Length: 489
Image 1 (cartoon, rainbow, N blue to C red):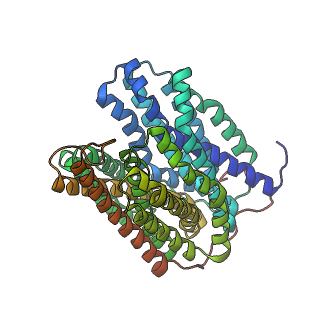
Image 2 (cartoon, helix red, strand yellow):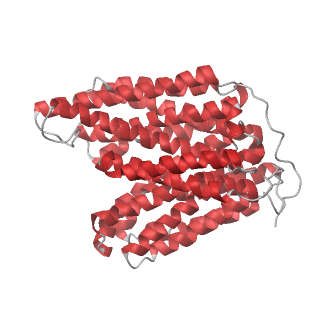
Image 3 (cartoon, rainbow, N blue to C red):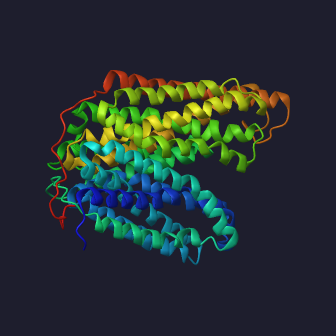
């Protein structure tokens, strides 16, 4: 293997983590454009179509913590490589699926692999880049965002001109490239791995609890929480047992002492609120409400382009500034801009209003994402000791996902309640909704939802200003110019 400088190995590692994580993020969304075709070819029915999405989402959310813990024990790079390889194999199974059951099983296994590769991609950047992790996370965010935004268009082209199977089979050469880059980028990461055995009871309880909670939030928002009470009850019981087990075992998967580190606890608390506000705007303001105003799906896609561009152009810059000056300003400014964006959407009543208030709201939201995403992720990772980088990544990924799911569920419920208080028929924020009274009810309901988004953003600002410190005691340097390590790297 060629001898590369440390700087080049860092770049190769960054490229590998971007490519590997993009596979997981893209497969979470690209399948949507293919669902009608898949349903027709495999005769799945509505329930089967839903499980193609749910199977992936459930296993992904359930195993973030476990994936991070495994990386801490056995090496983040090695775990990332295994995750990418597993993702390629399960993508092959999905592409070759001969019936709906096989495809759903393959999607669940893809989620398992995705959880291991995404958490360890961030943990690997934390280990390799050390105090420059903010800029690296910014670049990771920018390029994975490009892949995620471009995925529906690419998926649509593959489905229309080739076959839906290619949305999975295309992962194979990309995964092979990610594997090659990860191996070429090996560094002496010197981050001490955690010793001892993996806490299997804790891992099982965490997977059960977070999986059940994710199912309850997704299905409850769609069908009503009364229909999924059992999933929410199971989540409470499993997560309660997880806390008891983690406090009693000698080597817990998630040491709660991590939460005594101020920035770790506060960054994750802010992540919960900030990602709640983020997805409130993404789902309702820039998608559902835009189509309610009369925009087509294609036009709606163009409306969301500025957010991707802002991340590509600015995320790494703000990550680097946070590395240099400390994260507090950026962690306060980002959600403050989100709150401003939500307020700017309030006056919109007709499509014509979008070109003034809506454009201003999109601009504020785009800048907010660029300011916030890299610094908040890097703060959560850097505030944990290096030997816990994997579990720190798993915690942050889990918190961000739960915050977004809960916010969408709560705001969706608020919108429904407000709409029903003003109209007896119709669907809130229905596309091209007719009737002045129904449109007025939908507008009032949307505004109520945006008020909740403002409250979430304000909570995130408060956490940043009162809880985040610009400087905390840091772990020792993780990377040297030594020869690439064969293990633990």
